[in-house]
Length: 262
Image (cartoon, rainbow, N blue to C red; front, side):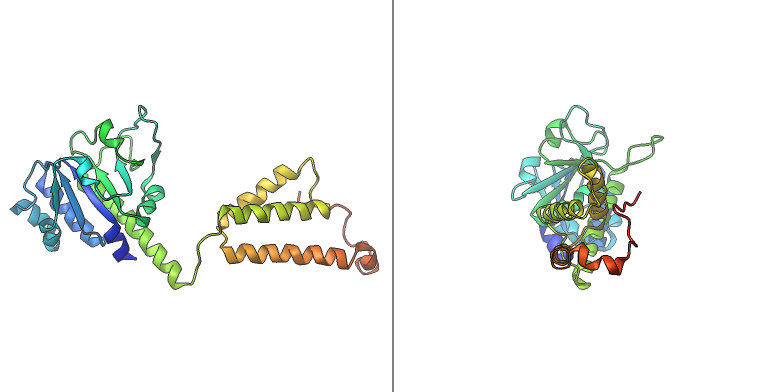
């Protein structure tokens, strides 16, 4: 999985001015299993002594860095791109997201994670080259992050996503069920609960919202949804096979006519 992330994701720095920053970026990339660094019109020597000093054992990343003249050139071959910004970008229609929410999207295809200049970030035209925008939450007392720090936070979030995927595979956990599978379960559940009187027509919608929130928190897998639907089918079969009249002597009035969870 780390190999896949490394093959898919390139870190793009637009016009970096500080060699110490570039060296620090190379180091944290290697820490987090990434190796593709692209510099757009760099304003410093990325192979100089200062950059190598900060890169420490990641000099190989500096030596294999690709240098291009423009952001479009840096994005050639990419299917997905996320740009970072420290501004609220109210003039752009693209919503701002947090790194942990957006960055895993880059793992699935050849992608670029774009960072702007140390002093003024990315222009609106450059931000518009990306499909999604992220902003790292920070204190109102000092909102601007150092370039290398911003790269470090994002690379760490990517690394966490990779590790999480690996743990899921090792534990045998399967992917969450598609939304259409869950929707079929909700419809089947509502039908059954109406049939047995747990739901009433006038309150069914609000009660089903609670069930949806419950299962949305659980992220059930395809197999788990199939199991839940199996329970409903068995319950429906039991209702048809053993009508309430046949069990009235056993239940002996132990259940109310219309039980609720209120």
